[in-house]
Amino acid sequence: MDNNEIKDLSNYRLEQSKENLEEAIALLNINKFKGASNRAYYAIFHAIKAILAIEETDFKKHSSVIAYFNKNYINTDIFPKELGKKVSTARFFREKSDYVDFYIVTKEECEEQIKTAKELINLVEKYLNKKIK
Image (tube, rainbow, N blue to C red; front, top):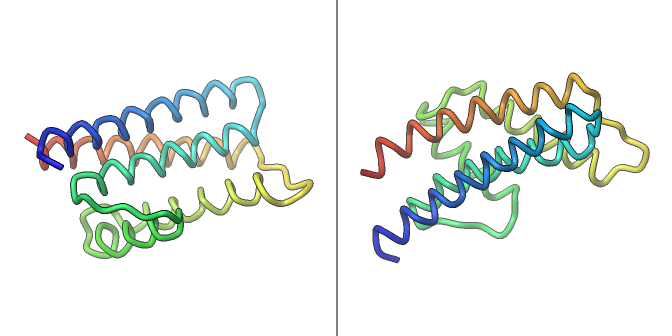
């Protein structure tokens, strides 16, 4: 890929992240916590994938994407350490609400995931603005 294609892919993924966040907020507002949890997680996931795009790195498994992000961005202090824990927590709640029968994510848990998504998107956007010029 050339630099313009890399930039376009990264921007596309970041926009997808923001759209997922909007969906999470809308679902939270109508008390659809399972859907809100899912969309908040995907907002986080696509924000991370926006970073991976500029490295021309990708993985098939969500766990690999998050592990790579933690290793190369959290553990190196590019992003705050506590953010790594928040990302893992969001993934945990999304998986529980999607795959465990009768598990109901709470409103407070959704609100926390949405807060994490907002924080991450903001930090990723700043990071990408420095990296992609």
